[in-house]
Structures are given as C-alpha cells and as structure tokens.
Image (cartoon, rainbow, N blue to C red):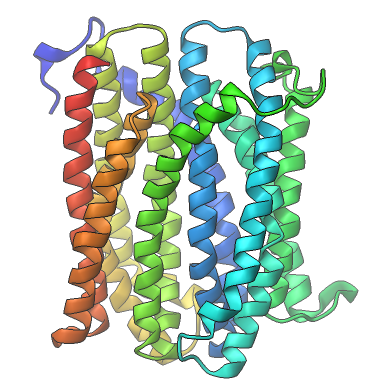
Length: 454
C-alpha cells in the first residue's frame, strides 16, 4: 500500500492509475501488435513442421538481441520529450528535435543491418543444429535484417509521440504493421496469391516490409493528426545530429544495454534449450513467445510511467509526485502480473494448441508455460521500475543493476540448474526467475532512493 504521509496534495491511486492507463492501454495494444508479428511468424512456421519452427525460433531469439538494444537506444526520445513537454516547451521545438533524430535513426539502422548479416551464419552454425535448420535460420535472419530501417524510423517517431502523450497514432501504426505482416507471411510462407513460396525465410521478408509500413503510417499521422501537426515534422529539412542526438545517445546507450542484458539472458536460455534438442527449443519458443506477448502489458505500463514521471519532473511538481507516479506504475504492473500468471497456469494447453499439433513439443510447452508463470511478478516490477527511472533520466546505475542481476546471478544459476542438477531444461526457467527477482528488488530500491531528489 502507498504511505499516505508521503503523498502529494490531491493524490489518489485511482487518479494516477487512470492517467497511467489512459497512456498505457494504446501502448500495450501497439506493443502487442508489434510482438504479435513474431507470434504470427511462429504460429505459421509451426504449420510447416518442427524444422521450420526450430529455425524461426533460433533466428528470432538471436535477432531479438539486436532489436532490443537498438530499440533501447532510441527509447531515450521518450523521457527527453516528456520532460520538455512537462516544462511547457512548444511543439515546434519537438519538430526540430525529431528532424535531428531521423538521421541518427538511419545510422542506427545501418549498423543494426550490418551486424545482423555479418554475425548470423558464424554464430548460428556453432549451435550444433542440423545443417538444414542452420541454413533456414540464416536465410530467415538475412531477410529479417532489412527490418532495421523500418523499425528504426518507427522508434524515433514513436517515442517522440509517446513523450508528447499521444499514444493513439502509435497504436494505429502497430495494427497496420501486424496486418501487413500477417498477410505477407501467409503469402510468402506457403506461396499464396501468386507470391513465391519461400518457407520460413518468407516470414523475415514479411516483417521487413511490415516495419516500413509501420514507420510510414506513423509519419503520416504527424501530418494528419491535429495533436501531432504542431510538431511540423515535414516543414524544414533534416538537421545534422548535434546536442539533442548526443543526449539521446548518453541516455539511450545505457537503456539499450539494460534491455539487451535481459534479452541476452533469454537468448542464452534459448541456446541452452537447443542443447537438449529441436523439440525442446521449439517448445521453449512457444512458451517464451506467449510470455513475451503477455509481457507487453506491464511494458506498456512502464512506458506510460516514463511519460508520467518525466512530465512531472519537467513541470517541477516535486519529489512526492514523482515518487507517487512511479509507485502507482509498479503497483499496476503487479496487478497485471497476477492475471498473466493465472492465464498461463489455467489455459496452458489451449494456448499451446494454437502454436503446434506436435504432441512432444506440446507437452513440453505446457510445462514451460507453467514455469513462466513463476516470474511474472518479478518481471512486472523490474520493467515498471525501469520505466519510472527513465522518466527521471536515471539510466547508468540501473544498467549496472540489470547486468549484475542477469549475468552475474541469473545466467550462472540457470546453467548450473540445467546441466548440474536433475532439473534439466526446467532449471533454465528457474535461473531466469532468480535473475528477474534480483533485478526487481534492485531497481525498485533505486527508484525509491533516486526519486527523493527528483
């Protein structure tokens, strides 16, 4: 419960929860739409058999590390714009900021594309998978690499709109991306509508085209939406990166490392699962894909907490209001975690049947979903605490907390439990839970301390 003695004047849980969820609900839907692209790819690949599902599973889990890191770098746009909005800066200033950030986004995309293409074959080839699975996974990743350009543009546009408190255009772009991806993945995977039957790599091409559609849709909203039109995105020329880009990198690189540390832990979990065979890694992909889909809800709450806390800081509302907004975000995350865990415990068999008809994969995936239910609470706290910390532009120490929690604690525990105890692949899940628990405690404590002086 919230300590009433530390509340700002006029504070109530209902008031702040409503303000958070007004922002968070469209962001949740947008996140679910974006991650739903991967869900659609996984479900469709599963219809081709275990080999295609394993290739998409390995490729997706490898690519997500790059996606998460560069996503995190550009996520810094949100707290910067939120604090400026809270301080009453005019929308035209945001337009200057945005035009300066677009060239940075292009540079980020080029680096992302290059790294994914150069590293895919050497690293995937070392996992001990069958040669055909390796070849398919690499082809999928090469096709997916082109999504870097669409996603980078979408991130810059998205997190600027988010900082302005305008989530609905983001939702529209996410829905467009999901629809485009679903239609193209179906066509390119199986050769429908006169399209070539590319198999699993077709999912990569579908995602790349859908990412461009998302960026174009959101850019168009800056011209059409009355709330975004004052930004004047299309007035004037692109600006050479300068001080604003430097601030984005200063804040964003630690954010990228925070997200990459967590994503890397889950990637390593997939790699560990691959050592137990194709069926095990395929089952892990089913369970973690659904868990990731549900994670979009507390992530949306955390993203809204960034904006709410950032605008409070910018408006100079005081430490009590900043602490209150962050705490409510974490409490909402915990409430959602309870519902997510119940869904995974009670509906696991039904969920798994949406992904695969293979009985061996299905039985393992049901058990993995039950294990994933255990870390929902810790995951909700760490993501909402991180969101609140971003709102006060505190990213460096949270980065250290995250790296220690996941790589000095979570990964060694998961490896030891998986390969040195009878738990086997179940031990990987318990290691993930331990790492998330340490991160949740550390980040919540950091916010409580740091918000005292916000």
